[in-house]
Length: 357
Image (cartoon, rainbow, N blue to C red; front, top):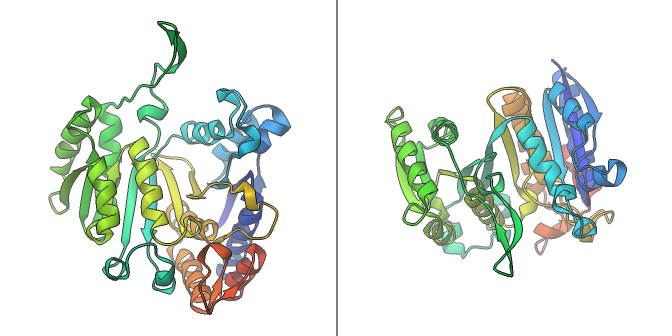
């Protein structure tokens, strides 16, 4: 197989961790007889500094022509004072929209090798944590119009619009039900239909879509209760289906209770064209350039790229097994460090995974 992968290093620790992820992909390609051509492009703060725009047209073009897009992280305090249209995060939102990526899949899995790093009580952690958040990605309050800042009755006023069409809800519900069919066949739809009209439509459309998936169990939770239940007993969840803003918050909560955001990958997919694969954590500018970052979420995002983006399941399994062997052998970056383990930096962790491929 000969495929092109567009690399978006971004900001902060982004270049460091993506280097390790790309090295693992290249080694996996060699092991299985594939050829991966890597093309790099600018996004986020790095793009603002170089071109004045968080998402240059050249980047969009390179991504569209690629077979998959591999992103690390964007943003940082350096650009906090920039106007909204020049913020690094606009690049991330923009590339998702440009590629039509409406479904964000964020797995949260507590690996036995990292049970000691879990933030839950031991009795709760012992029940297990293996879920996936299916988050709608291109609608909701992040994209709704009208939006803006203005003065009303002499007071500065900010406003955003939470909005969904039934088709936007239906297509993400299909992704959730199809995902559940490959797992434990349970979907929990999360919304706030007791107070939000948008959520009432969400619930109606999810119920309608469920008629085609009688083999999948469907339940419903308000978002505040879902946040509580994730901490109280995450083992009850298999697939969580939710909108953009609720999914943003819940997926971070689900992932961090496993021990570290540095361990969790994600995939953003559309109806066609290349998918985008990235770790769920941010750019961590406070440790950028210090060889302290955990590259494992990025490496595991590379595994998702192979499985979901290129249809290479055996290759993805190989990477995931190498990560688990590395952890089983006791190697840890600072964010997941435990007593009795061996502390390594970003580059060394990448090398340890390569050795175990």
